[in-house]
Image 1 (spheres, one colour):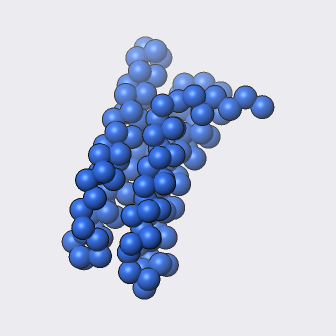
Image 2 (cartoon, one colour):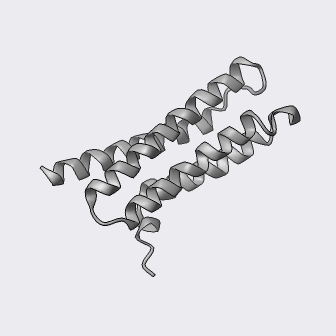
Length: 119
């Protein structure tokens, strides 16, 4: 089975984002284990998972669809990190924010490139 998604820079960066989110959530209060921690981890896992699923589908249109879902998950992560900071559960993590921005930029660039190829 060919695993082309592993060659995508956006998938590789998204996998690193998952690792970063797991480290970040390990610092959150234990009473948030089934709340914010769980939600953040699921949103993070969703990003590379949707990129991989889209890459395994037939064609650019389907990949664009799944990259769009990944974009939504990236927005969820951003919102949930902001909430953790506002609730004083965590201090702002600049490295995590930088990784989130990197994955978002790579994702949007791939969407734009694929759309251009379809025109």
